[in-house]
Image 1 (cartoon, rainbow, N blue to C red):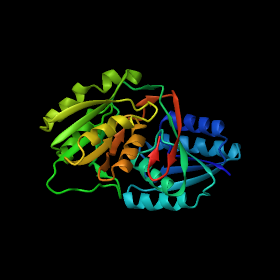
Image 2: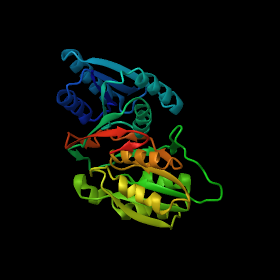
Image 3: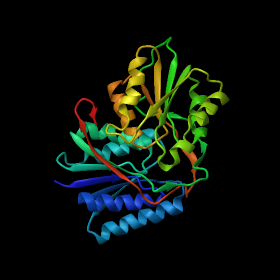
Length: 302
């Protein structure tokens, strides 16, 4: 039985620091390193990829690289190939710290098919920059094989787990043009959340695209079930009234609870939003570590 770690390193310092902590804490034997062929901030990303590879060599850890493209179907098939080859008795650790949401969700789909449980790991940064985080959000995309079940004649309700960039909120709203939007906002003042992720910022984004039917909800993505109840309660209270699209732009752990909601309600669609540019210095250091084993049966248990 081996301990297997999946990571998706980026240009952030915590990509390497988190990997190193994971390997030491869980006594990892093999690391699967998912890397984009054309990565953003490629110089810094390549620097940390090299550090990870060198660490693996010096500590006798097997490193396997998984090269991916931007095409959703291609990504899907590549992840399927590698995950299906794993020994079902292995212990799997999925570090989502710097992992794109579509990669998280696609990985969960295939891990759920192959394993009874895996362990999710996330490392907060120590701090965020006071300047911009991302620029030029692209067209929102529905996750391959997770585009929901549309009922004709029903309105579209959009659930947005908001983050630090209201421009991304505006982009999603403008693209889907929902009849109603639920702004699900992280509670607390950690990492200046109470300044950078206020309801006023996201309400302004709604106003910019002419959406007036808005409900504000709270979420704590760092609680024991990653905020699942907050999202699930919205869906349950409005079940049968609308076609739902759910997108996670906030704390990375909310991507896990969003996927759990999809498994509970497969009629909803999961949407993600890439950006063309990220600030190479938008976060610094490494902070608190979150680790939780999730169970797979027919669904997902946190």
